[in-house]
Image (tube, rainbow over all chains, first blue to last red; front, top):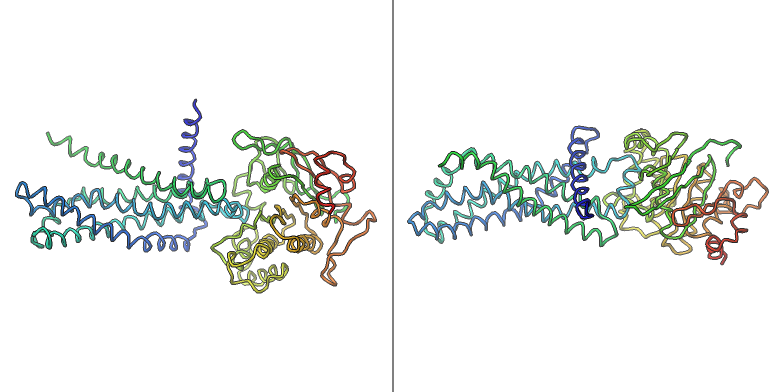
Length: 257
Length: 276
């Protein structure tokens, strides 16, 4: 077997092992509650501003674009429908996850990577602590809790951004915008809108930790690990969002002739 | 000082370790008995650090077996290893203090996190202060590692290694990257710990004078200085043994006198470098 294929398979194997151990540790003592709360603060509260900003402007720009397209068929008033469905189903989860990946996957990779190359991970093991229990599991739990919450915030702020543009620039009545936006949403949209960030949370936390823990070769290695973590997490988010959407829409497509 | 027939503390039997097919240790066998001091000399990349990590169970050997305190640790799970590691203090290269914790929290870490230690909470602070006093860093409890100089960080790391009172101490290049005066301070602390607590000591280093100090000096508690010991067959010379590693292989094992008598060019290089 060629070398790169072996390395690729080994990487996948290592990643699954890390995932398995991180999940198993959720149910094992000791629990580092302080670390979980600290991480929630760093990932959740820390990312709030960028999530609000990206959410607002993605809703705003979508309203601008879609209003122009809908105006061709005289359906400008339906812009709320299009914006809310796109945001809740797709852009809210994906953009939020991408922003958090850029901010926190890289942060985790560089923090854990620095600890790895300065032997702090070894020291942790020497002093009776499982680094996965102490470092990875709290980050995983924290991301799983805060990423869906951040996504909800991004969805609402995005719709608000759309509303502002709809009223001020596109000349759609505010009440019409909100009623169409609200009526467009079904349970299926909410389910996938909240399931996606939960899956992305695993990607953001575990990819960041994985590349951090396998960093080698001093500060240069830490830089490399950070870059790899962001790239890999972002690509995985795009790939997964496609497959998740496919699962949720497959029933829908099959039933429509 | 080891008694005759002292217990075996650490034993390597035909241990080999490799990384991605590149051998780091090859067929290494040696035994360290209670109370002994062992100086492991070797150039950079000769496998010194890997040896210590294998001794601690941080690195699993590809073949051969490692025994700690009479137990074979080669096939132990990480959780089983935690208990045995609590009897070992390790000074990592550059200290490896946790950046996010203060010096006091760093030193308290093994007391609070090693289940086998079970230090009562109200005793922790006292023991931390005691350990920091031992390394003469009483004023740094609330400071972070990044605020200390390299030598102070190394001393704090020694405090963290000795705070639990382990019977075996491993030092990975304790003097690397330090100026001669600070290096001497660190070595004096290592000799002091050996003589005060009677610990078995493994020191990995590339400086022959570190080994020379351990072999020929002892700590005098009256004036807190190191004093030379004249060889009478009972001094540290008799229980300090030297090992030389080259490319992962053990090329010398014996006393200082035997090391000085060696004609091997690689071995005598270390001796000459320390002669000045």
